[in-house]
Structures are given as C-alpha cells and as structure tokens.
Length: 380
Image (tube, rainbow, N blue to C red):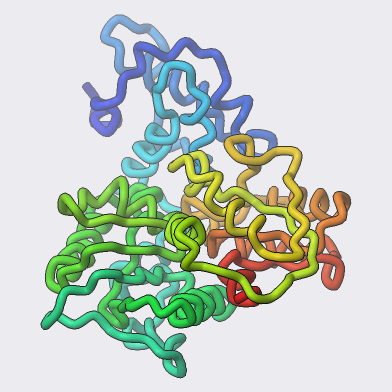
C-alpha cells in the first residue's frame, strides 16, 4: 500500500455503491470541484492490487479544503461509508506534506501557539466576563457545572454577547456554575476537521486534565462544534456529562425551573446548525425553547432539521472562502421572503456567517440574527 493510501486503511470503501448521494447532496458541490463520489472511487481503485486505474495523486486534491464537514454526505450515505472522514483523511495527508492554504496554516499555527485559532492572547480569553458575576473553577471543591465557553464566544466581539447572555441567564436562574477562564483552550474540533489530529490530541489532553483537576461533573457548551468534540472525540470519563446549552435549557424548561416573564412580539425562524443537527440529532430542544417564549410566532425554513442548509462556517471555512456568496445568503433571503423578523441560531459560526449574509444581501434593517441565549435573556 502506498504512503498516500495509509491514511485510509481503516475505512471500508468496498461497500460504496457509487450512488452519488454524497456528491448530489453536498451543499457546496455546485460551487466547488470537490466531488466526494469521485474521490471515493479513485481511492478505492488505488487501494486495490488488481486495478489498472490510474494511480491517485492526492497532492492534486486541493479542493478538499472547500468542505464544511457538515456531514450531509455521511448522514445520507446508504452504506455508512462516511465520505466526510475520507475528506479529513486527504486533508491529513496534504497537511503532513505542507500542502495547506496559507490562511488555514496560520489558523493551525495560532492554535498551537496561543490555544485558539484566532491567534489572540490566552491571557485575554476570559476578558468578556470582566464585569459579570462569574466563578472560576476551583480545585478545592467539586465543580458540578462547568460552562465551556469556546474560542468564538471568548474572542469574537459579536459572539461574546452569547457568552454574556448565557452567564446572565444562569445567574438569573440561580444556577451555580464555573468557567475555566484563561486556562481553557480550543476544543480542537476545527483542528481535527482540518486534519491536524496531533494538535487536536494536545488540545484535548490539556482540557481533559483540567476537567479532572477541577472534578467537573457536567459541562455545557456554547458551540455545537465544542459539544461534538467533547462528546464524540474526547472520550470523557464515565459519568462526566456534556450538553449543548439548548439541551440544558430545554431541561430547565421541562422541569419548570425556566419561566419567561416578558413577551417577544417577533416572527422567528430557526436555523439548524450542522453540528447540532446532522452530527448529533438535536432538533427538538431548540424549538421547545423558542416556542415557549411568549409572543413569538415560530416559522420553519423549507429545508430544516436533517435537511437544513449549511451556513458554510464549519470545517475551517470560517477562515477559508470560496468565490461567490455563502449559502447563508440564500437562507437570509428566504427568511426575509417568508416574513421572518429574526433568524434564531444556536451556534457562534452560524451567528457570524448569517450576520455577514444580512449585510452582503442588503437586508440590514429588515431582519436580525439572534442566538437563542440572547432571546432567552430578553424574555426572562
């Protein structure tokens, strides 16, 4: 087996029947040369000792950096071949040979040096909480609930408003929680998705040691990407629960610990984040929260839940653009056409891509983008 093929030896290509669902349903297939079906075929042939198929040159597969890792291809694959993992495998090979777009190389270097892909000082990670009532994890006691803030909500000025709203909501409900502050590092989800699995392991080990040191019992996250990494890629010790905030607040709602006292007279439409929906099957909890807010008129996109359209923010695409507008622009236009006043999101990447899309489509003043935590804070 050639060096190029070793990154795929754990994947089973023999069951791929070349149905084309992965390419046909890929949200960026129409604007990128990335063709998951063709990639699967080329790798399968190259791994066979009997083939006369031209050898695969992975070094020419630069289009794999266009992938958003939304998991649509893997979600709908009838044979469970996981084309997204193939793309990540190709990225790993390219990365090992230094064949990475400059912007993404900078992201990986920043995560290595500073513990976050934004390349900002780790000493400023908790600056957003400066004027808020926040406890920091203490090794002298058991920290029953840890709020894992994540990089976007720690460093991006717009996403910081979500972390602030989360903190205000938890405090208003009398819930005792703590954060890791400047000790927290990137969850590593986008680092893994870019193929840098060694750096991902370093980030994972750092955070897991903190969870153990502070005797953490339960974790809630801002980002579905952090939730996915912690839940599915960390291998957390048995008994340590991790939840996305929509799950946590839906449980508070169900137990009647969360009650709203104010009305929000707005028409809302909710966008399902890929890493919350297709990756982890969380669809009902965000809707229960939004529909319980007094005054809200709730709408659904024509494509929602497992058919939701990717915003193009995942898989490193926050730092790597393709020519033309992002799919978030189509969602914004649809939301305006259906009469929505607010697009509700539950992911910092969705928040940022949708806010950009509102501007690039000329819809400022017509529609706003709000995270669910911000809406909960308005209604408390």
